[in-house]
Length: 71
Image 1 (tube, rainbow, N blue to C red):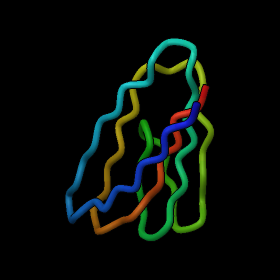
Image 2: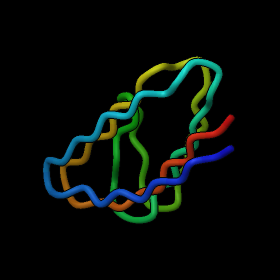
Image 3: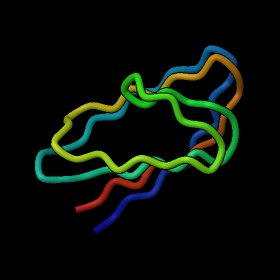
Image 4: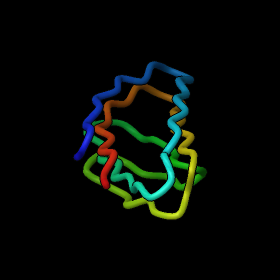
């Protein structure tokens, strides 16, 4: 069972998300630039995350992203 989230980050925005054991995440950047656990991503970039229990999403500007929490 998947969960899908949409986030709008404002200038200097930061969002933390806990990934439960045995689950994975996919982060899709819809607009702007975002750092995902320190990795820089921009519009249309995405990252798959496994074997992590926490995501830290940060932007210096405005950004919109989708986060998929996957089994």
